[in-house]
Amino acid sequence: MFQEGLYAYLKSQSSLTALLGTTRGDKTNGIFPMQAPGDATLPYISYARVSGAPIYTLVEGANRFHKSRFRFSVYAASQSDAVHVSEVIKKIFASFVGTFPDADATPVENVMLELEADDAESVPHGTIYACHLDFAFHYIDTA
Image 1 (spheres, rainbow, N blue to C red):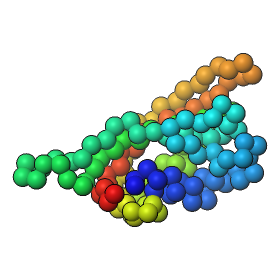
Image 2: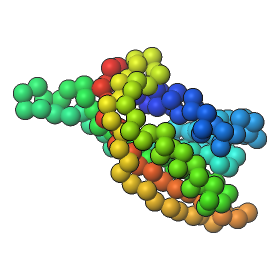
Image 3: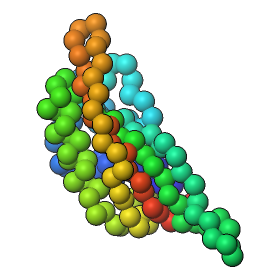
C-alpha cells in the first residue's frame, strides 16, 4: 500500500533521521502519519493525504495509475530548524522515481512539489514554527 511505503521510505532516509534524532525523548522516530501525539519532541514531521484519485481514460475509465497530494508539515522550536528539515524533505523527493519499500512494492513514477508555506503557532511555553510542503505523487496502485 502506497502510504505504508511512503512511511517506510521516509524513516529509511538517514539525512532526515539525523535531523529528527534517533534518541528522542518521546521514544519515536519523529515521523507521524496524520497527526503527532501531544507530547511529541521537536522537531517532528506529520503528513497526510490532501487529495487523491485514479487517473481516468476515455476507453478504460479508472485505472491503477494514481495521483495523490500529500502535505508534509515540519514542526520545530525555531524557524531555521523547520526550514532546514523541510529542505531535506525537498531533496529526498527531488526527481524521485522508484519503488517504495512496502509489501506491494509500489512503483512511484513522479513526485512534484506543489506548495511551500511557513507558519507559527503560539503555545503556553513559546512558539512552534512550521513549514508545510505539498507534493503530488504519481504512482501505480499495486494493492
